[in-house]
Length: 99
Image (cartoon, rainbow, N blue to C red; front, side, top):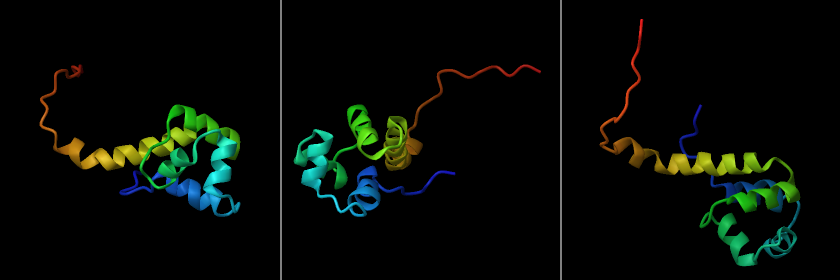
């Protein structure tokens, strides 16, 4: 079942990792090996999780890199759903159904 409006992965990082562990953006960025600006942009929903960031988050907080990327994909698809559904594109290929 798809979520109608899933949270941005950055919000989840803040809510489930930074706040409970009492981590600041500055110290977390240092551990991740990224700039404070880059991590802040992620946490505030201005940037998404890249493949490299998924590996960094995996090493720091656990979970697999794929699970971090899945969170981003779910969010991105939900954000683009309305536009995608309204696209007027004629199918170029249809599989034949044989009886």
